[in-house]
Structure formats: C-alpha cells, structure tokens
Amino acid sequence: MKKLVRGIVEFRKNIQPEYRTKFAALALGQSPDTLFIACSDSRVVPNLFASTDPGDLFVVRNVGNLIPCCDESGVSKADESEAAAIEFAVLNLGVSDIVVCGHSECGAMRALVDGREKVPFPNLREWLRHGEPSKKRLKQKNLSVNHVNPLSQANVLEQIEHLKTYPLVRERVAARRLRLHAWWFELSTANVYAYEDDQKQFVLIDEAEAARILGALGSSGSDEAPK
Image 1 (spheres, rainbow, N blue to C red):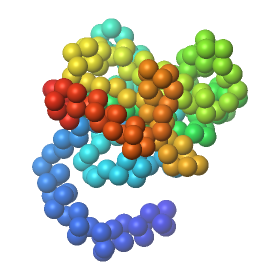
Image 2: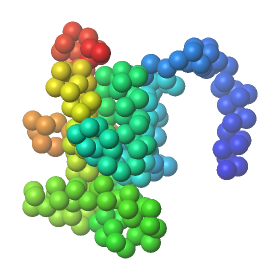
Image 3: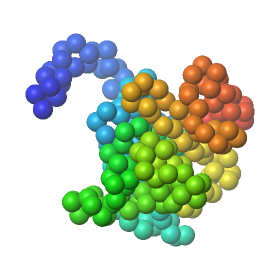
Image 4: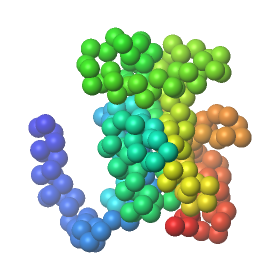
C-alpha cells in the first residue's frame, strides 16, 4: 500500500503532465477496440507487456481468466459481472476483438490440479467450477491434468468456447464483425504466445508471428473488423 500511495504522488509530479492531454480526451469518452480478459494475478500486467496506452483496452480481470457460460437468451448462468462487461464491450463500445489471456504458474489452475474441493474458501471454490471443463479438455486429448501450465493453456481455449455461448458474440463472429484470440503469457520469460489453430499450439508472438497476425487482421482491408 505504501508503494501504491508513493506511486500516485510520483505519477502526479513527474508523469501526469505527459498524459494530461490524453486523459482530457478520454474524459469525453472511450473507444477501445479490444476487450482483454485476463487473470487477476498481480504478476500479469496487460498494459505493460502489450505496450498499450490508457483507452486502448477494455479489461476484465478475475481469478483464472474464467468466463461463465450463458443460456440461449444471452443471460449468464452464474455471476453477471463478466457477462455485463462482454455486453458493454461488444454492444456499447463496439470492440472488434476479444482476447482471452491466461498465464503460466496460475494459482487458479493449481487449485484445479490439486482438486477444487480442497479449496478452503467457499466463494473461490464455487467460482473455479468454470474451469472444470478445461480439465476435461485435456483428458479428451489424453494429456495429464497434473501440470499447471498445460491446463492453463487448455483453459484459455475452453474460455473461448464459453465466449461462444453468448449469442451476441457468436452472431458477430459468424458475420466477421468480431474476432476471438487465445493468448498465453509466460511469467519467467515475459513472452506472449498466440494460439494458432492450424498448428494446434501456442506460438511465440515474435516479429514473424506478429506479421502473420497483423496480416490476418488486415485481410478485410482494414485494421478493424467492421462494426
């Protein structure tokens, strides 16, 4: 907390002037093009590893970067917070992309590996049920569910499928108005990986992979999907 308070003073004295014009414009409204869903883990800082500025990302963070499914009417089957953020980002802000980003050494995935029933905190234990299908995904591929990082990657892919249970997401993806991306952040190297469906694996986002992604984003003749 002390570092937080001192940081605010430091920002006000030395950094704020650089951002004053930026924040003045943002005070009139926001127009991010990406909804970024990440874990609450303090070690995962999307704006840092993606080098983004204020206003670039609409960010949702929760334990395990989980997305509760919804029913065919578009109503969440669990906590409404994530569903509300998805609705707002897609319908109000008109984002063209949604990124689900997991990470290595994830505590939520460790809890699932060890057994959710062993979690001593009732709300956390219930919340982690949205990650149980990720264990089934690994088992279906005859992969061990006893390792955190493979489960974390499987969980990112599973949450993409959970996103598709939202009619508003499914319809816009089908109409090529919205794109879904599965990313994974490796803490020990600070590297980010993107899942490539044709390769069936997460690929390091280096210059070559970035060029491929950017090429795919621009395939329709624009950097943004039509809204």
